[in-house]
Length: 313
Length: 282
Ligand SMILES: Nc1ncnc2c1ncn2[C@@H]1O[C@H](COP(=O)(O)OP(=O)(O)OP(=O)(O)O)[C@@H](O)[C@H]1O
Ligand SMILES: [Mg+2]
Image (cartoon, rainbow over all chains, first blue to last red; front, side, top):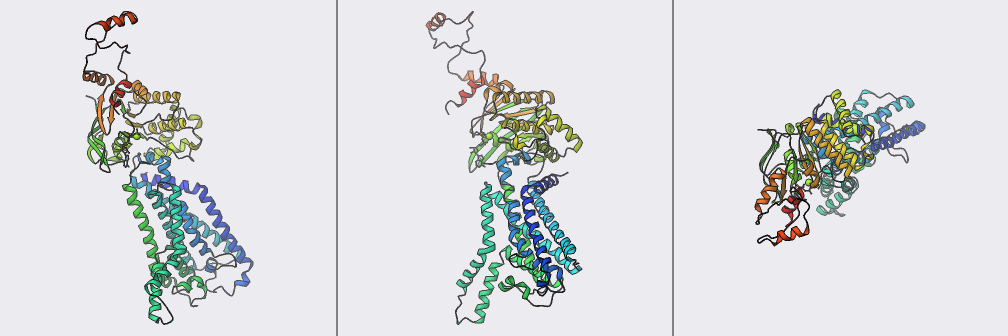
């Protein structure tokens, strides 16, 4: 077995057996079950809101009173999951003194970081697949709804997008675990980035847009459009925004355009559903953007790690 | 002539423009237990890391069994075991699992690995706690696990960076015994960095002293001791007395013209003396 494989299997076993995996899994599982449960109790009430063609997908997107939708859970907790898996990947090995033991074995240095990255992605995939399967099973069993092919393919694409999204946060965590020697520092900085991309980016994009093109009563339509454009450009730096748009288009087949309004109430958009290929066209740029963000994070981690001194000092 | 196991030629390492290792030339022959001595910050660990290809030299080169450590690190690491200073193991894994990971990284097939792991755990006296998580181990047990990790890959060269720090005297004795045993029974060449001069003197066949990145002395303890003697400005005369040296006899020797002083000496130059001689100026 090559070094990469050995590291991969060791890390995967570590992740799957770790307490943090168990806790996260339980949290997501409980929330998924409660969504399906509440839905099954109040199915009549929501029937009007549900699109007849894609009954199945609705269970991922619909939010029920106090309980947020499943995609909200993923877009909100996804970053936390990724960060939890990534933030101490390298610096904990360094401070515990395990890194020099591992790297003094006949493996290349990048086997360690590649193995950890791939094992993290595999863990995320396993977690998401099992939860999606559990939801599918519950829907089938409790509600007796059978998904159609279109829905299944949409869920598969949604799954891939989620892995990339959470994978981005994990790579960012790994990057900080390489840059910062203290695990507390890397955890805090990762959380700060999350808060920034999830919440502050909206505010900042507003401020900048208003600085560049100030609006008042006399503003022309053109200026308002420009202002909106700048806002949207800045917001699209954020993986959270990218992912939200991807999931909306995927799980809500009628979505065609994006803007702040689309994020708030996706269900009220144009009624005629698009086929998957069309939805994919809509979200292609977001998809590529998200993937690029993850790969950039990983590439930077890789380069920094390869040039770093091995010692803990 | 014996095989040269480790061979450093003009090995130099700069950190932020300061020479941490300065044109080191170092040869270690097969079967030796080589004591690598020097004060804190002298450059021992840096030299070791370059030997393993874990840090690149700024200039010069270092070879292990003829393999260049920088260009062929995998070949070097395959036959070399390294016990780092401040070594650590995965605390939520057992000793057995930790060793298993090392054998996997070395590509040792499962059956053979399991037998070897059992054997080395027995050798270091951890067989009864093999299935206990390493997090519950004492410092001494962890260090013994470190020795097991060194042995499990059946190396030809073992590089031990301060393997006895933080261990009680009995533990130190045990580790030194292990080192001698592995050197004798398995013909493993040993590079041992340590601050415990008495222990080094006891087990090392040769020593190298490094100070501020430079090798200041290299050879057997006797050789270095003798060369030091030559450097002394005054001649030293060894006089054997029939019984114990009495104050009267001492006094009468002092009376002889030209004698500067009389000093009672232990028969050999101890490493302690040599070391202090090198570093008494700071
Ligand atoms: N990554 C680094 N960047 C800059 N300087 C470093 C780095 N690593 C080590 N040094 C410096 O190199 C010098 C030699 O360090 P080294 O660890 O090789 O010494 P040592 O002989 O092993 O000391 P000790 O007995 O304390 O282990 C020290 O002055 C140290 O500060
Ligand atoms: Mg050192």
